[in-house]
Length: 354
Ligand SMILES: Nc1ncnc2c1ncn2[C@@H]1O[C@H](COP(=O)(O)OP(=O)(O)OP(=O)(O)O)[C@@H](O)[C@H]1O
Ligand SMILES: [Mg+2]
Image 1 (cartoon, rainbow, N blue to C red):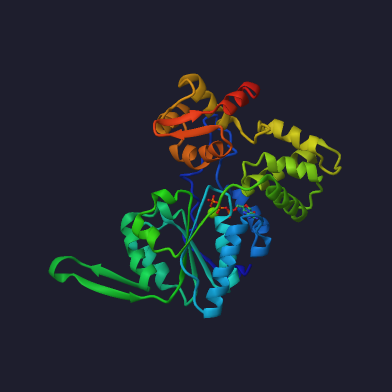
Image 2: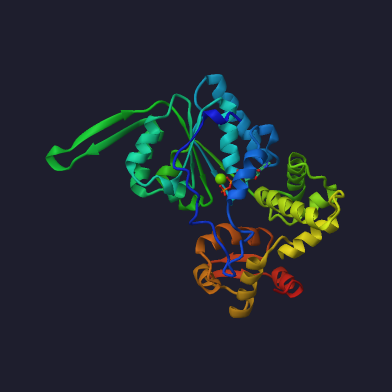
């Protein structure tokens, strides 16, 4: 990756979405941590060939990239949606690299005034990629300036009011906007409509995560057995970021507790035990949530706000991070009247009591 060409504006950690669970312990659910950020510089795929899984998405993306290159045009604006840690930021980097484009990175909550956005947009060169992370958290007034900018690379900014009002027009150079969101449902329709390409990232299969773990282990100089990589993958909640994070925890554990032999499955099992991550990859917060639905609400249905309040957790953490995986593995059902626990979940909490 051409780091020199990468400009970072207002680099803001999404602290609002980072969470500690109520016990104060860092949660597995925590979103991108500083440690993740540092490691992701070395572990983040920078070419499409290094991006594991999401085959259909990659096939479509490759066609779009090639077509844009043949026409010598910037690629259309694209939106990546999906739960945290599945590779949205990585894909934005891959697209910019592939197009040989300069990448400017910012995030929805960090653009607080229209002037911030206009400053960023007017600095873009022909073909640049602007990546806006958490685009659903951008303020509505700022967002409205984005519409004409995306549509015809123009912005009209009105200064002063009443009889003194005058319009300043900015002509922008053709650029590509890449938006990333964990909640595409919160995006305003006019914004959504201005993206030409939508990609949704789903959870990864254990085999795909196992490949990611194996490759990361090579980069980190960790020797690990295939069945140990697969065990990490099984417990990684379908999420590459968590797989890499668990690998680092297993590496720490092996360094301190073993005499440096190749990491086997039993070391992974032990390390996971100390982290209180069970065989399904669930941690205390997941189990606590299921327990609360079971004990306090007779298995549900219970409204998600009520549930977040009872758990004393941020609603966003529950909705963005905890719930999607529980739904995916069939432990939770979403009904019009709220969330319900499934029989499989009840079985699981019986065996894995908190
Ligand atoms: N398909 C993949 N192949 C290999 N590694 C991956 C893949 N997807 C993600 N990763 C790894 O997971 C890390 C997290 O991915 P990334 O930061 O792109 O996720 P994200 O979707 O942007 O998350 P967030 O919503 O929290 O911003 C990357 O640094 C990379 O190491
Ligand atoms: Mg990201």
